[in-house]
Amino acid sequence: MSVDLIVKNATLPDGRSGVDIACTGGKISAVEQGITAQAGVTIDAGGQLVSPPFVDCHFHMDATLSLGQPRLNESGTLLEGIALWGELKPLLTHEAVIERALNYCDLAVSQGLLAIRSHVDICDDRLLAVEALLDVRERVKPYLDLQLVAFPQDGYYRSPGAEENLARALDMGVDIVGGIPHFERTMADGAASVRALCEIAAQRGLMVDMHCDETDDPMSRHIETLAAETQRLHLGGRVAGSHLTSMHSMDNYYVSKLIPLIAEAGVAAIANPLINIAIQGRHDTYPKRRGMTRVPELLNAGVPVAYGHDCVMDPWYSLGQADMLEVAFMALHITHMTSRDDMRFAFQAVTENPARVMNLEGYGLVPGCRADMVLLQANDPIEAIRLKPARLKVIRAGKVIAETPPKVARLALDGRPANVDGKDYQPKAAG
Ligand SMILES: [Zn+2]
Image (cartoon, rainbow, N blue to C red; front, top):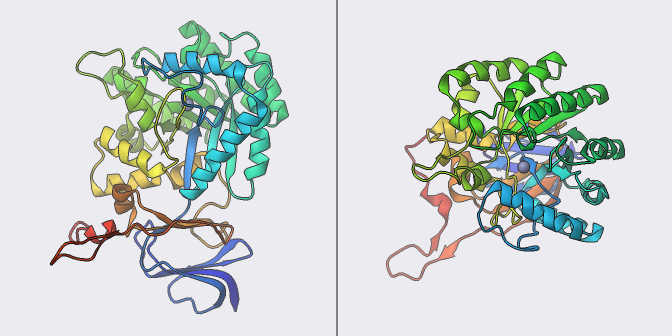
């Protein structure tokens, strides 16, 4: 028997070690110890972590890498970010959006991030960003799965033309219905927008992913309507509420009733830790709220939870490098989820959980899945979050599409080791 590629001696995210992964015809054909087949290409993982690719289920590819155009966000708030993006929108060109998006995808691939769900603003009658990102979706298809969400950034009802533009964007081939109920003029308008948008998704057989309650206002309760509409229209498993930051500030009694509804409805929660901690709490003096949704409580109720990057160098956030391990790292700090199991969950929240939220096909390290994987310079998922290590090999459909040399420092100290490699510092007793 001969195969196209074998990765030897891998440690998998679930803790299995000494595993070989064989790939044939772009798919995984075997995952077991001691595979002896001849291979066109053999990669020795050396006992290091091999993971399915990173997945970002919440991003804004039309705005990414635009930092400073036409100016910087001085207040750091969501609202100034939206205003700033509104200033940039009329200046966008098709070519510039495509160039920034393709540049970002290059960075993503180098980090082993091979699937992204991006919102695309439809509140521009030209639908220029929609056209550009549909083009990008096709161009990156061989190496990156890009899902697009029709996102009425300035409000589905609040922005004139948004209703028509959203329908046009879906007709053009945008995959998912978005929304932003907390940005509508009234709570009633917000709830009505959730109903209308869920009905559109039900009629068209599409998924829903709404920016929902991205505010510190504890009375922002649109997630309740989103869950109820998901039940009414039988959309369970196809709906995500993004951000849900108001839940941080809600009354505990109300949340004890809300979370079971979200679980029963089959709505997934997407938190965006870097952006939530940077943007929420800006109206507070002290203490300042963290403003991230209630992740442990959602998980305990059985709600699928995934983490997104949301922004990289755009009107809302100045930093980022397409590294989903930075997202996981921030998340476990904000949520106090620092037990070994909790940290392993943080790794799942940037790999398999967002893959499930996006309903990605053929994702995972089992036979029959597409042969997509990442070899990291780390021994296990917790260490990967700690080190944010080099992605030594990024593999797509059985072919290496990106490589990074290992990061090893050379020391010039008498009596001390010649090299320092972060993964040699793993505590032996931690488990
Ligand atoms: Zn967003």
